[in-house]
Length: 391
Image 1 (tube, one colour):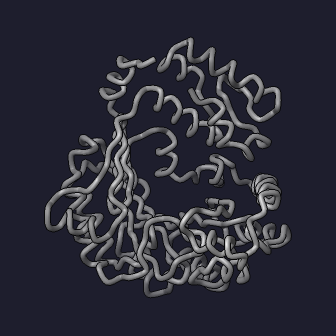
Image 2: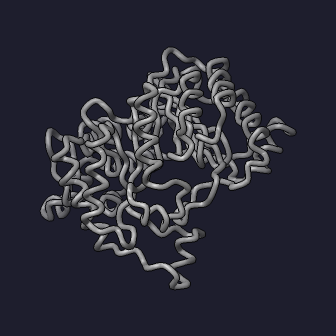
């Protein structure tokens, strides 16, 4: 079933906004669990910033003049950028893209970078949101994860950012780490209210290939990750977040009303975005592409050859359908069955409902206001549920 008419219509249906993601591939040190693309050497940071600015110029036609709504500095550790570097990159966006009003300009930051001097410097940039990699307010967890900061620095960074006028703050927390008791996990969540944090992301510790954590577990120098512990702490997360007034608007993201992350929500809505930097991914509305995950090759290709080193995939309507099922089911808004009918047809809707019957009987999904929505029980199995519904 290849609905080419649908794909053609999708290409012509111009979105109202788009986002730009900028990958900063540097860190002071490697965390045991991380498999993102980064380098612990800052030797070529200046050349990387130059290459990122040049890629922004080379990619200026990618979003076809769709207005930029969000800019997101991710990594790696973007808080290793100076005030001057941030301003130059943002200025390059404004020079080369249609920018009506950027509502959200996020910088991912490590707590140990957010000292008074750096926060004062950020006031001279357009950054209006911080995503702080706290991970835990417990020193034992931070030592286990080989984070570069301690619990006191995490607490200080949040308060100092707020004192410097940045109230739009998100933090990351990790649960399921060996040694993290339920009591300590509850205390980590209690800090959210204590520090008036409007948004947070919570992730289960996962063992990824080619990480120090996987190597340590294989060598039996680290305890294995306990899936039952992680599941129990996810259930505590849902319970305590609700009591504190947070809305669980996406499997890993929770916010006080009105404080959803605009950039990431637009990902889940299927809006286009441009990824800049090594390993960054882009989505045009009908295809995906991803840059080479190699700093030296990325810099050389762009600065010397004026070429972007990337691979690309044109998506079929079935791929779009499966992606819509996967991303929409991760959110509290669910999978819109009216959209399924409009975009893919009544036969697809019928098959989707048939496939969902057993999941509904098991209490993992429900149909509400003609939306297929994952229940709290189902959130523990979100990826598997989406896979079961794929075409």
